[in-house]
Length: 67
Length: 470
Image: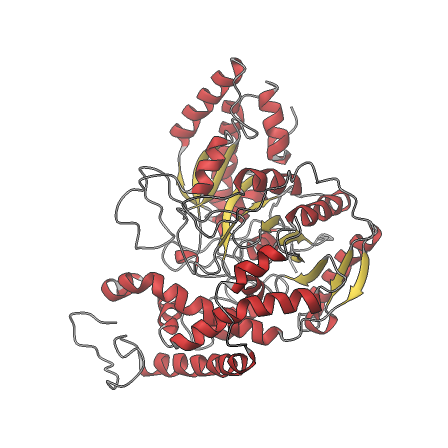
């Protein structure tokens, strides 16, 4: 994590989240998990219509309401 | 007077209103039970004895004058310690607390107060409500009242424990990935995680706002109905709070359930431990005995839902904690810190893809999985009640796998935002566990009617340590 002390685990400057002070093991595990999730996001994105919007969620809940 | 511990909040309120018992008597008894519960389970963050008794005297005086304040007048409650209360600082279960006392009550606390309820304590939660087991490496782990070597479930651990023990009839929790349902299952009580937006989150500590849902745990389903009626509704302080009308949940509690269709995804349930599969069948036997129709259904891609909810949750939680993580990283436990760090590795486009896809996946789930169905049943825990030691993974490399197994059946439902009722399984003398009934959007009244009918066959229990567990 960014702080006033020098990090014992300085990552390469072009690493994602290089500002976080993490052990190499934790950093590698985080990157691997994010990559796993990213593959799903990529697959889902290819199936989504261009018009898909973050507000669709609330709209669908309200439209499908069964009080 | 009947044993106060076994009364529902609704029955206790009626007894107080009818002067069968005073609010002071009820409050003293609740404090005594909560202290005994704490000795066993570590459920209290802060006990507020003097203030609660003063409020109870005020409630009794009002009742004596015929001015009972609301449906919970004089009823002592306690809540997860993450809700703003005017002039106080919530602990958030963490070393890092709000930097100043709250300027006003959270919506949930304000509505309980308006209903006349008292608050006797604040209760244990996972650090920043970011943990599904009841472990808390900052304030100490919560222990299960049925067997103190076992987990309570989290993050609303203290509420689950206190309700199960009979210290309080109902209390507040929240659910971002299972935090109402898991303590309900582990402690053998009921909970309602309403549709996302049904209850205002104003003044509740945010974890991942796109998923955060305020709800309640109770032994009696009628108390879930009572509390939801008090808490639900629009709120100018939370733009996500739904403006849809709030039904009279208590009036619908005894609606007929015969003929309602309950969906069973057998291939998904088969991923649970065989004992848990049997528990689901036990519950289905009760439900079909009540006249519900069993039907097959299928979630088309549970793992995709699980990945999508993580793509929303991880960066959402990290964003909420960015300022603290940059200045006070050492004040986080390694487990929570590692999960918050993880969110920084999720790309913005991936996060937005998950948010943009949400409406599509809700519609697809309703059109396909819920086709012809009223509710769908799933386990809550994938396994029989684990021990604290089994899941004491701290920030070990297997953290994500272990936690992923705990929330396997709960977390994806938060992505869909659907209402979910947790019910305890028939215990048959063993340790508690639970199932969840997932409903259509804003169909809480129907879920509660099913739960009410279920509890006529499987009555609520008070938790006490079993002589031998498992």
